Image 1 (spheres, rainbow, N blue to C red):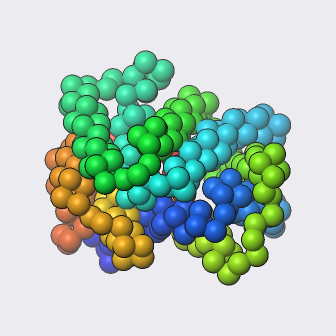
Image 2 (cartoon, rainbow, N blue to C red):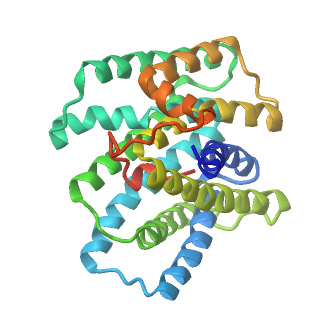
Length: 314
């Protein structure tokens, strides 16, 4: 494996995890919807300028498709995830729940897209769910928040999965920057409306808040997404998905270093169970551990197409 692929793989794991940390950073200074409103307003302006410079122009059909996808993959997904983190769900646990998304998509693709789920993935889905339950149960043992708050990242993951399946069914053709721009504008309007209705559209002008906004725009919106696309196009969807399953562990380390969030034995056991289920041992062997091997095989074609929506980052 080329050195650049190893660097890209490590960057993907670290940057993807940073989004959950940004959620915890930002919600310490403002509500989740206010943080996300400003994130998407600024990101939309940057993306619109880039699309204008590159001469990318949308069609009405493309706008309609991307508005629907933006609602599920950006607004509903991140609204639920970041709100959950803001209400007390540990960042590592939120990342672990979100990491189940590819398996949920695989389960949903069977009845919607007519794709075969298979016995192995069915077992993996149930085992992975058991691992998530184990981690959440460990959190509840020492947490003061209600168990229902943990449903927020679950609903967010289901929303992202819905958007991913819809994108594959719609077979979108818009260039990635243009699709990102339309989805960002959609999310900016929805989150800004939410903030106005909630009565807090203007945040406190603190260094901490704007540092968090800069964090999620630079590291999560552009850094993580760019790393994902780079790995996806060079190495295929299977390897990219396997790397995403490593992000909960990285998030737990981030949260321990930056916020002092404890890493419990229950969390480690649940994480190991979920990782084993989600990656399946074949994927771990050939696509994750292969990062340390020279001359590791690269898949000739993605085994499970990863959509652009599934790359929605925090």
